Length: 131
Image: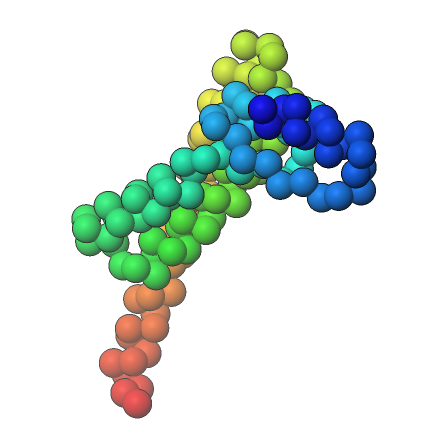
């Protein structure tokens, strides 16, 4: 259904910006390969939200969860585009998936360390210079 609608839109309204909802990652790759840039997976943002709630229940600060979620969304969006280019070749896709996962993991860990360091610095300055 969506595919037919997109074909009609592209043919009759080529300058209209189209925002596409994909049922899963595979379909998202297909849309990206067809030239659609605004592609969103149906359950992606609810999964991010639920993951954030879980992290908070485990003791993460709300601010940390928000910043990590924002970074994950950005890095996943970038990764999705890279992986879409290699989704037809299983070996290339598998290799790139591992690379993307490792890079994303490092970036998220480093960001969390930075956030915690900034938080400690703010807490220490509040103790030294109370308002």
